[in-house]
Length: 502
Ligand code: BLA
Image (cartoon, rainbow, N blue to C red; front, side, top):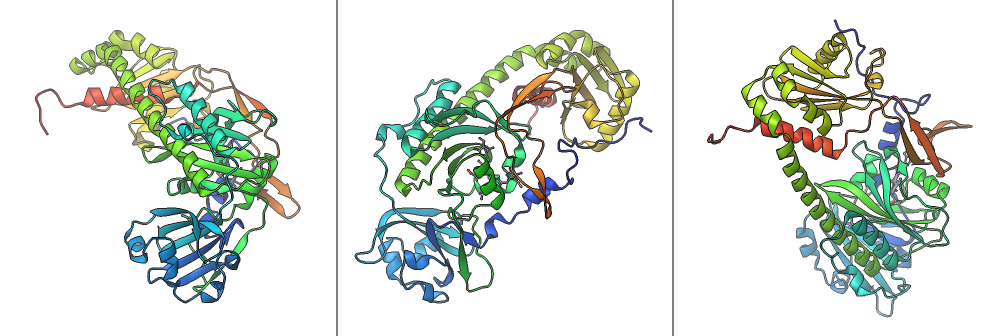
């Protein structure tokens, strides 16, 4: 029997219901049945029949409200220069952005977005505001090669602010621990304070909201407090708004923006390996509606940035791999000859400890192990080995705090642990010491729930003032470079011997 109680996830937000994060994750964002009032929406099915219309549709397209259940006039597709059958043949998620279209003679010019969705075609109509200014077309040229990361980061926020005119534009990046941080910011000199360098808890942007960025080019909230408009339905079910930019704003997020003193918000996804790497997030203090052309131009800038970022990351990885290849060669060499823990650590302990910034190591070969440097006592390591062997299948496991992961572990002279599983039941354990860290947050992140008269509600923070957390009992985080080094170790020691073929 092991002497250490099983793993319990750390609970930052003590006193809260355990499932508060699930509550955020279960809001039916895409089935709100309502839209924001700056545009109007129609859903047609694959036969061209109108199944849903927003209550304000008359404002954009007179006489259509009566037509729920009937076919959209063929003239519509003539005026949008996009035949219905062509639209229906496109893949779900594909969209056509049409600027300055007239749906009726002598009618106003409007912007139209047509999106093929699961149910048929989603039609979104927006009044086409005159652009505030005509941004310099050079802003949408690709970023020059050879910029440093910092130059690229500040380049994208400056360009997006020049195009959109928002008060504040930030590059917000998700960290490997799920939280996020503001890496670059450009703001109106009159706007208050800065979010640059501040960290925000992962729960501020739930996964359900992050996933929508993989389907949409941007999320536009021109007037967060504005009352939403209901959608009339033929089917009795709300339409799927996962591809809709007009989708009404989550009430929690409305409160969040209000607490931040933000009225208009606009954000563009930055994507790497099909997942959301970050956002370019824009804030304004007063309602701000941009024409489709301006939105498309800002999106192009973010896409250019995204491409340069991927290139930079690829170069970084290549350089890191070359360095790792060189530095890890003594380890590879000894491990290819011997799996004896003493042999391995006598040759490579110093280099492994310095590469992984560890204070102590354990090398397991089956159930035999050898220790080096500062580690917990052997009996504790044996118990940990037993638990981890039975609970974790992944090739890499890590924690920044063994005492948070295993509250019964007792007093130990280390905080963090990374376990790297190698071939033949061998594993390398790296211990890190406690490093007291100061983390500057955008407001106290530990209180996402409040008590109001009717009970407990999930609510965003009231204040986003810089709030410094002093982190004790934790090691430095296991960052991307450490992960890369661990993967490199696994790959290069399990690679098929030269000459073998698959
Ligand atoms: C959405 N939260 C968002 C979005 C951002 C943030 C960028 C996307 C929509 C948008 O662009 O406005 C958070 N905004 C930030 C952060 C910064 C910023 C971190 O500018 C930092 C500078 N929010 C909460 C809690 C919940 C929550 C506790 O604080 C959960 C109950 C939910 N956030 C939430 C939801 C959305 C959201 C539901 C989706 C809103 C929508 O699209 O309607």
